[in-house]
Length: 137
Image (cartoon, rainbow, N blue to C red; front, side, top):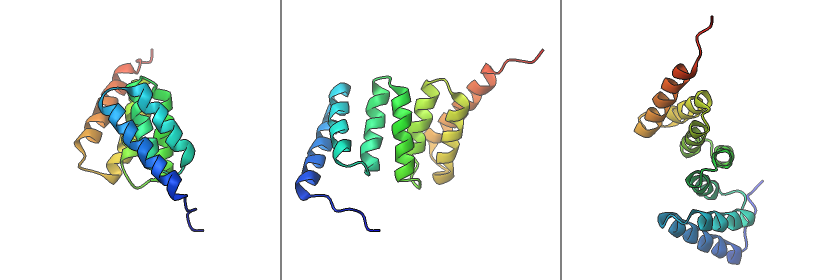
């Protein structure tokens, strides 16, 4: 089944919202970026790039559960790029779910084995997994 064609006027509005969101992100105007991305995603629910940007905006606001959910959507829509795994790992790490974060970073490393940020995230998460384990008595 071929992807559904989006009306050119809607495509233009999505582009405008994406540009606006990026500008807001660069100026650390995270709520405004999030609003623009919410509108863009309402218009196009199949763009992994919009979900990736929204995962960033959520993370910047400390909304790590929402960031992880958007990262999952990035992975669903584009499983062969590492971006979704990085953002998922970052969000889970900040939620103190270190084992799950390590797994997400590891999945990203399967796609991009030489990525230094993914590798560092993986080892940071692994270190905290071992620190948080309680010895059995």
